[in-house]
Image (cartoon, rainbow over all chains, first blue to last red; front, side, top):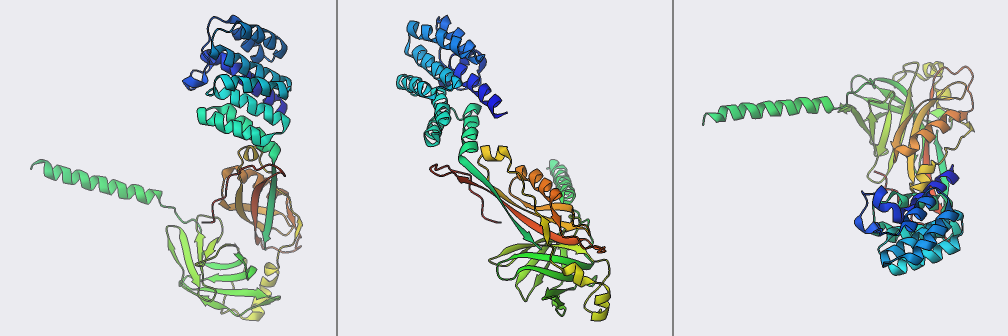
Length: 166
Length: 249
């Protein structure tokens, strides 16, 4: 069940940046990435959303080369980060997300994607730090709480203590 | 000027409606506390769990007798009891504990408090009426000693910590009181303290699986309570911030 949830999460994370314009209009303006005429990025995002990570990476990489603005580059890098996180390659994911954040500091998805990649590596404090930044940019994003929940699941030991009164 | 009587009438009407609504919202007592009760009183750090016989008389008096070392102590008079908004109150002047019972419960029980301490109590109705005027021989016939025997758990099921609570970093605590039948089964559990609804179902499921030592032939349901503490601790090397519990109210 957890695996299914993770896959769903990855899809929403990765495709989020480029696909935000059409799919998530309720979210804050700064969380969206303005999409220009770069069809490769749009199609790459769609492939990533459908868990076709290799094809998504291929298309997004072409789109990244053709990107005409900082916003497009940042979104492409964030999506590559999400795709690699979806494939389980946390190191590459972190690298792409860090590049994306260097271009745009206000993209909560890049922080969220990197948090997930840190989670995959078991680096929970780093993941939490990124989630805190993401939440400060977009407090309403469900994805952030989902990743936080996954981290809690792995990093907290649950105990129940009982006492009988008789 | 002409509008004044109309306004006054309207105001009166509104006040009356508010009063009626307030009466409707008041809890209605469903339990008659008068009678004899076998109780467990818990939560005192010095006294520990106590088995107490309680006699609530219709004249407003309350008497208590404690079980100590298998013997029943002489009856002690407590303060008079009274009911306000389905809450019954009386005080044990010897221990300084003020008792409160929620008369919307199926049985007598609730909380006790002193200026510094807080605990709970839970009773099952005694099959035979006993009280301070009943002689010890008759008390023996009523077998209150067996009702005062501490419950011995034979299997204690641990509640499952809800995954949703772990993900949400939720901790909590609860107290459930119940009866134990002759076969040792937990019956009619009631949650009397609960910090978060998320823990209710796991607690009730665990209680349903728990067993106590049976007391064959015992016709009276024996009262018992169990407190639960749901805690989350960061695994080594991780400084997770978990939701803090509120102090007991």
